[in-house]
Image 1 (cartoon, rainbow, N blue to C red):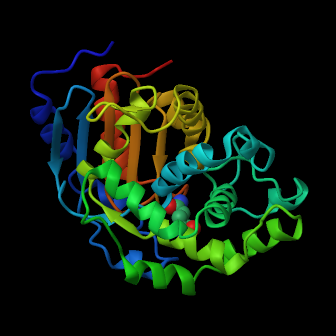
Image 2 (image 1 turned 90 degrees about the vertical axis):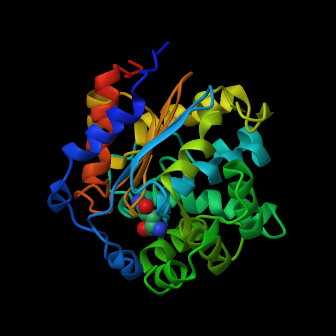
Length: 309
Ligand SMILES: NC(=O)CC[C@H](N)C(=O)O
């Protein structure tokens, strides 16, 4: 069991100070033009613990586009709805390819490698779109419930930008549909997926929302079972092997925590039986992971010796 440092706030302040200027090593995502308008200099880190501490440093109140971090929440909803039959439509293997790659999907007959690359998340979006009468509303309600904040919103500017520039995601979904692995109409699936990616949240909200994954599926603030214990272990396993895309091996090697990144520059990392870290800094490396965000999480994890391996 990890020992909680008394001076958590000081540790986080020092980490933020150590990263000044390093955002220049990355590049803010611009394939979704609305994301390119965010200041590259913003950065934040939050840590939420199972015993109710919430500590942060930097721009912790600034909302950002959660992008692929939303894939974790979508997966929880789909696992709760479908149970084990979900795994007949999507696998749980690392892809060894960029997050939006198409090439593997045809070889593997429209079955995505895992639910956190785009193909897999679009498959999950199809599950939600076909099993909820209003999946977008259900998703937003789920996020508001977990964050305990009714003000969490969908950034319409980002949504429109994704819709206009979403040809690759459309191609992935049509390809899966051609193999019979998509039930709803493709535009409906895309609309759900872009909606969940366009949700804005800050580091404090994201860290708190994911505490259940560090606590065997139970939200420690309310004792509510958000997913089964087995599913929380499975999700953490998928995040460990695939959550940082084609840099997941390096992240496991150097940090050793289940994690998920998004092209908005956010990263969440689960510390089992302890809490959740969320970091944010918009400039990304070539894998689509935040440069400074990774430094912040690895700095914290290494200082406290948090690797699960
Ligand atoms: N890695 C990501 O955050 C990708 C999400 C983004 N909405 C996309 O589909 O390309």
